[in-house]
Length: 371
Image (cartoon, rainbow, N blue to C red):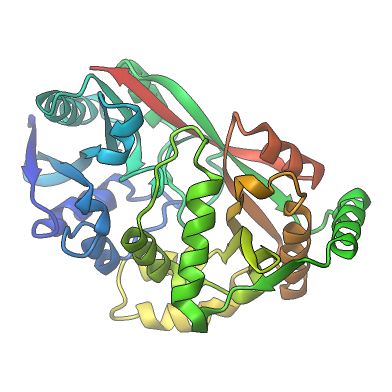
């Protein structure tokens, strides 16, 4: 049967859209099914603040009535401030089937052209502040929390469709069996002793609103000059943090303040994919059991955010933040931590991770194509 691609309205038609993912990844032992209720809310313009500045079209591929693939095409006003002719794509899910991949891409690129776009960039689900990047190296394990996953065949289809690399994103692995180099320990200790005006403190979830303001101040400033950076508004940041709040453990999340002013932030999350995976997308009938019984078995961490405001980047604030987090992880008995993702062009962060003993173990790629 020929492949049929239709534009669907989300969240109204969320079930077949998500069903396609279960079809695509059937039998893949490393795929982590998303929670269906969370995805339904994410795709709801009334509940996701991103839709206040962006719009998206969602497409579903069917063959003989069976959902077999998905793709989105989206416009982001903040992206257009720097790249006015660039549209985005994401949620590009398909089996190793050129007919499905071609049909989906044709629909998404046609929509972007109809919106006046001259270039497509992705995958972004929905922006660089959400899950992004196509896994191109490191298929031998499960993805960590809030990281993407796809089959090893996908890059070949992207390139066959005429897409070229725009930027690589690296995931570094830090093994708990490898001690932190003495130079890093000494740097952190010396800096702390010489700068009493600097305070490293855990996040305070009971003071959520003020912590959110500090986070927003650091986040938008620290990444302002990074490739592809997209500012987040207060409502979007609030929604994002509320979404991960159940995963936040103050043992692994810290602010650095200089004379009481927010200067840097480190957010490390337990790898709740280890909890979510056996739930198979649902809290019922047994999802709650897995959630309640597996939380204590999480033994991996993901360093999600480590940023320093530009006015404080002359200070080695990363060292004491790294040390506090690493010591807390060792005390918790984790096997290691993933620091992800890091731009291939971010030599400063890459150098710091490599000095800590980190090694690149997965690579994700952002692609572009002239339409």
